[in-house]
Image (cartoon, rainbow, N blue to C red; front, top):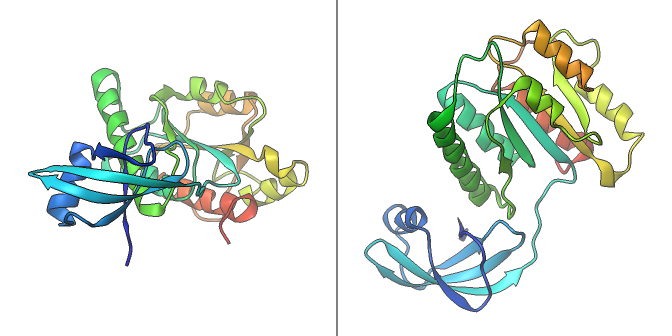
Length: 252
């Protein structure tokens, strides 16, 4: 029987009792209909997970006993930063969810000149918080015990410039003469497993402006393709992540 996994904000400690977060408690009680005595797995995002058991349910509050710590790590061998142009509505939620399942380390929502979606101020803050909850739910589902980082919405030029110098950088382009897989195989032959850090830059539904392309290439982003077909902005990152994980990560 599959045991329910729940994220509980840190710090968790073995042999303690804690209350589940309100939203998690509601899900456990009203959706899963678990009862006192049910076993859980809980994690706090700092690595590893804990055996746990429901002690008591009062209305919509759930108190659990935290058991032993299990040092289980399901993180990718590749440290991947996804610079993703903003996509409309549920498309961005899908990207964030699936990128988490595929082992991405950091997600940077990118505002570009041709982005259909515009976010700023309070609206941007609300969306970032929403995406962070999407990430947590995806981690609960897929077994990750560390929470990927979601950065603030950033203009394309600033996002590209902020990528650390040691990170290899790839810009997904339908016009590129070299494929992502070819570029990765070449670059992997020149690096060690301990230095598999890379950034993927994914364009918006309306495409990059010429100025944005020039800035990206000037700071070291290499144009690469994904094959003969033009992929949507919600399809391209998932295809690219699968290629990366197959070649230098943990997809087999």
